[in-house]
Length: 168
Image 1 (cartoon, one colour):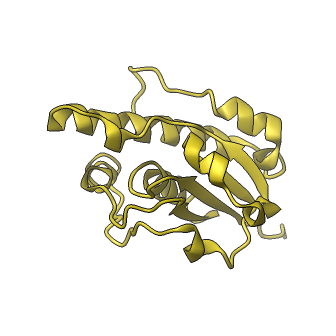
Image 2 (image 1 turned 60 degrees about the vertical axis):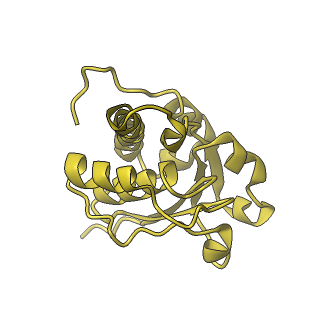
C-alpha cells in the first residue's frame, strides 16, 4: 500500500486580489483535483473580484468561483504555505517577511483589469491571463513533489506562455 501523497499549500498574491490571483487560485484548485490547497490575497485588495475573472472561470473553464472574495494579507497571516507565488511586481516587492516561510516564486503577469478598451478587448485580456496561468500550473503539476518547490523549476515556469493556437 502506498502512502497518501502530501498536499501542498499555495498562496497566490497580486495587488488587488481581483483578477490574476483569483484566476490562479481557482485554476490551480481545479487542475489539481484537490491535491493542492490554494488561497489568494492582495497587498492592496480592491474589495471585489472583477466580474470578467468570474465570467472567464465559469464560461471558459467550468469553474464556479461565486464564493471568491477580494481579501488582504491579514486574511492569510495565520497560515503557513509551502509556496507563495506572486503574480505582479508590486505584490512581490511588498510580500511580508512572514510569508517567506515557504518557497517564494514570481510569475509576473500584466493586470487584465487594467486593460483599456471595449468589453471584448478586456475579456480577451482575462482569457489570456487565465491561459498563461493554466499552462504554467499544468506543467507545475506534472513535476514531482520535490521539484514543485525547486527555485530553478519555478523560475523556468515563469517564462511559460501557451501559443495562440493552444487549446484549453
